[in-house]
Amino acid sequence: MFFTVLTIFPEMFDSFWNHGIIRRAIEHNKIVASAVNIRNYAKDRHQVTDDRPYGGGSGMVMKPEPLAAAIRDTAKTLNGAKTVLLTPQGRVFDQKMARELASSDGLILVCGRYEGVDERICHDLIDYEISIGDYVLTGGELAGMIIIDAVTRLIPGALGGEDAAAKDSFSDDLLEHAHYTRPSNFEDQEVPEVLLSGHHQEIENWRLESSVMRTLLKRPDLLHKKNLSRQEREILGKWGREIERILDLYQNGKKGT
Ligand code: 4HQ
Image (cartoon, rainbow, N blue to C red; front, side):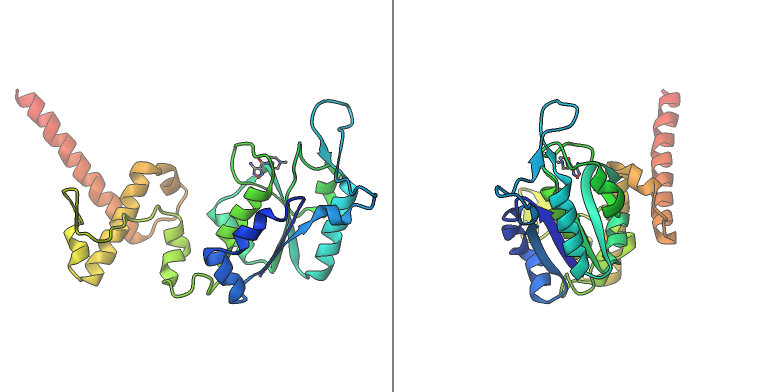
């Protein structure tokens, strides 16, 4: 899969391409990634990419001609590429969207600066408008990195030796289970005994229960939109009954006094 980023600050990506999973995915030819300067496509002597807004007001707007030329020239060499504009007006990025994008051949990510890009770019040249969340950035570059990061780890082989189950669509929709490493006692806090037991099935069961209950307590909204497996429903049922039992004890106890 390939990623081409169009930006006036391509140097922002130098460090991103060169660390961790992204770096390894490039080295192992799982992804081809580059950042191209939109300025290279500005025809005037000073290679201007922005201009004042029609109608007046503060701030600048990205000029349409250099952007259109950059998108067309990039798309020409990359068959099957989808173009993405990073903007707060877009659909809010989530794991489902990351999976959707991971099944494409490649992405051309358009990163604006200033007040954004000329509206006429969006109609013919952009396939997806994506927002990474409801807050305002100074440019689309960080948003582009977030999308590339989340999509890359879904590409088969990109995580290397790691267990494929760790990134399947089911566990991706739950919070991670609690993690522990040595020492087994840290400041009087013990690691749960089952994790030291060596019983692989019991450890798997504990981890699923940890995931489901952490999601219920910290992000119940995630559970509501998820398709639950039989085992996940059983865990929620078990804890639901346990909580009812505790409430029951409490109420009967009060009646008695
Ligand atoms: N932007 N998700 C780029 C964002 C944003 C977001 C504001 C996009 C500034 C120029 N991008 N313009 N949220 O805040 O993607």
